[in-house]
Length: 549
Figure (tube, rainbow, N blue to C red):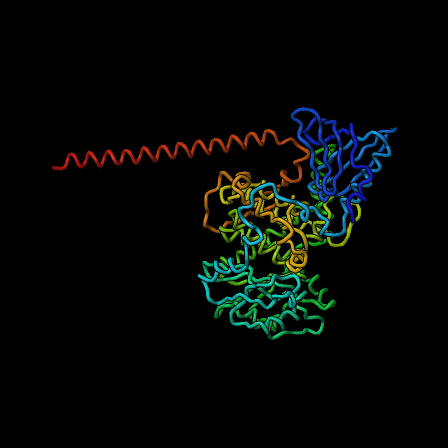
């Protein structure tokens, strides 16, 4: 298919662009295969370059021969284009709708993007499982790398290489895979070097109504326990939902077969409930006519902050089991690709200082989201404005980023990255020139040959010039476990995401710049103090030598 076939009118003059916090701009609108571009002949007016894949929905309206297109973006921005001529307006709208809903992944922009920067680091090879395993292998010999899933034959949503107990061979893993949803047998998610406890993740066991069991599964899970120790299974579904799953062939670990494990149910919502929550929240944030009561009522009705609290509470529970109880944890819901990953990731941010650095957090996203099989292509296909709702969309990753922001806000000096880093990841998960978030699993990315045909997001982000935008000036390495508050009054709305197109950030940006300047000036003064102290010490040493006979 040629993009030209979808572009009915490639160019229109005298189009007026309206967008938040900018004056209206008149210019020429151009449509390419992947971008909507508006350029003005006015001096000092920046061009608008909008990826078609960032467009969630469009509305059209007409007054006489003047047409207006309202573009609603996946990053919650709303842009208005006033286009002279009804036919041109209809053609542009039709073209945008076609170009923003392409079915084939290989027609998306990452396959056509060519970097304008020098590639210093190949992000596709920055966070390989072997490298991550090396971090653990120095502390324990109880785990090994398994290549049982080399051709994605055992589990289509797992990576080719996983970390499993050394005492369990690959044949046993194959048997366990037939007993777990989607073949997702328990694998190592995190090793706590302080006490050797671990977090594992998996899909639900396929016990069914007959109480089916798997001796290899029981052996695998028990292999993670120390002598005389108990473990915890944290099921991210309510007991009622887990029991309903048994009727469909799923289920949960029976106490009789897993006597050393205590099962805890913590209900975390999923799928359409989360999508509807996002839609309600964004709608409330965009309505400027609310009085205080109505705003608070709509915010509460969205249930967004309730979801944040549920996820953070479960992550804190997992971290407490590891650090305070000295017990290992297995986490799963149904598939093990959504709420499970939210909890395992956040528990690591609480427990592991490395996960709070920029590279450590990137490694966490690679390991616990991309390689672990979170279906980004399905979950991020649509955002808060799209009218045609399908079953698979859900802001699972955005909720995770919001939870991270909540912890960052409570511990502003413990994270090497800032809020802009989290916002950037949200934007690229929904629309990007990079191939990192394309596809639903490592298996799909392999078939699409993304490493050969697209650029990794990490190749761009990890350039020194880019990293400076995302570095937290307040960062001081903190090697302690950090315990976030999950009290309702401790969990505010993330304004940087949900209100950034509704309120001007000029003064906040100026205050941030001033803070950075003060910190830099303080560092300079500290360096001078250190030099003067050294000089003073040298002078005192010289005086002492002169006075001695």
